[in-house]
Image (cartoon, rainbow, N blue to C red; front, side):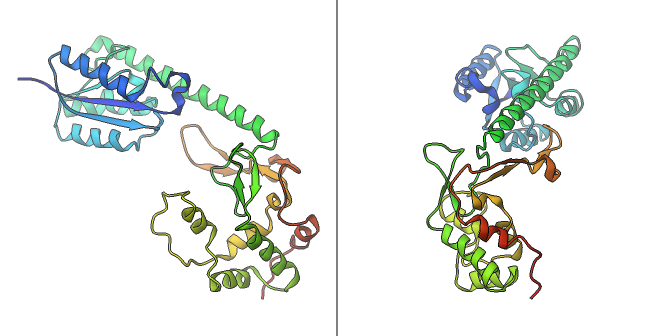
Length: 302
């Protein structure tokens, strides 16, 4: 009786210059050829593109593990152990705990991992350490590169602040968005000269059916992961407050307000103001410094 094998392939930006050799197609060909040589029957091919080896929520990774638990196959085959995971705890959890319990054999082609071999266990654990060190070093290098870009006043966010758009020629440079910039000016002028509050400005924009920043991004084909955004939407006082106190609107770039606690986690912590990276006059302002200064006061309660 032929043994059923699951082929798992993964690629992400962390592979840098090896994207061609690590391509999903090349991994599929390698694994299929290996399975045929071993006379294993391919149950399914599970592939995750643009997912880090530290991410345990990869959709096809999770689907494969669910099928493994159900006993739909008896072997998982990868090019290398790092394609399966780069996290040492995940490797230990599955390779040495759950897979033996489920009757799953884990095999790799290049680094010759085989979880059915007791002599192979030390090699698997060494691989896990190397993969962990690789991710840590990669994360540190990326952090240094981002820090240098921030010092130069280059914008690093996924989306431009409301009122701006990323330059088509340089994604790190902000250009004024002529559609939303007038709304930003209106917010500043209302707050400075009309003796009004965050709440009243938010209510006014909602009443005249101005799309919120989230809605505007969605309408522009950005942030498409947010399904079900309603139109017209409701502006919040907190959105108005953030706009009024953001120096980006007078042409200054302020970054480094938050920091990830670890390359292994997505959680971020707020950084003290003295550690923020501020570079002045990096792009065209939407409001004058005088108007901005008028709005830097305590919220109006009425």
